[in-house]
Image (tube, rainbow, N blue to C red):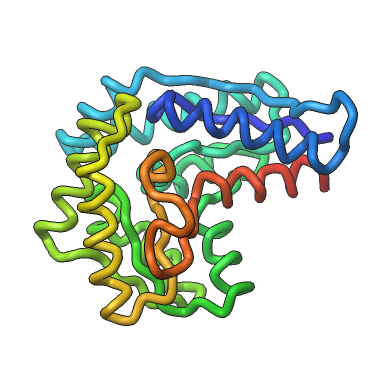
Amino acid sequence: MKQIGIIGGMSWESSAMYYRLINSYVKQRLGGLHSARILLNSVDFAEISQWQHENNWDALTRAMVQAAKQLEVGGADGVAIATNTMHKVAPEVEKALNIPLLHIADATASVCERGGINKAALTGTRFTMEQAFYTERLQGYGITVLTPDMAGRQVIHDIIYNELCKGETRASSKEIYQQIIEQMAADGAQAVILGCTEIGMLIKSGDVSIPVLDTTEIHCESIVDFMLG
């Protein structure tokens, strides 16, 4: 089994899901008392969030590169960033490493391809929905990406940072997410990508009329594929 290095803490709520899911998938595949060989480098999300909202991507790049290199020195065979938004700096992290970076959008696009999905709704932070780094990665696989209108993007973003990243789930927020997703389904989306690793705390398969692609689950499965070769 290869050892995976996880850059976590963004938020720790979703990092805990990564730890649980990766170990669950390893146990499912290997059985017995098997568990995953994981190195976790957990950052302080208050600092990361501040830099994000200050648009200080230079500081964020330095933080992610440093965290990734620490994992490589610690013996990781590959690195995964346990958040969608920070994949904005994935190219710089990849360049700094001599081991693979397992990209969350690549794993998600592969699931879309296998499912015949070529038009998908994307929910996530405003950074993920509005900037090119994520949508262009998906478009490179031939996937058309739909995002909510400006008001919808803002409310999705606010719920992520003000509630989900603090471990809070509210029925009223779930209803808002459902309404926004159903509007994109009416616009032709064949599935919805939960493009923030916390959204799966709120929206599950069956909560909306189209398939739900939880990037946390998808990323964890791809990580285990890598680990077990």
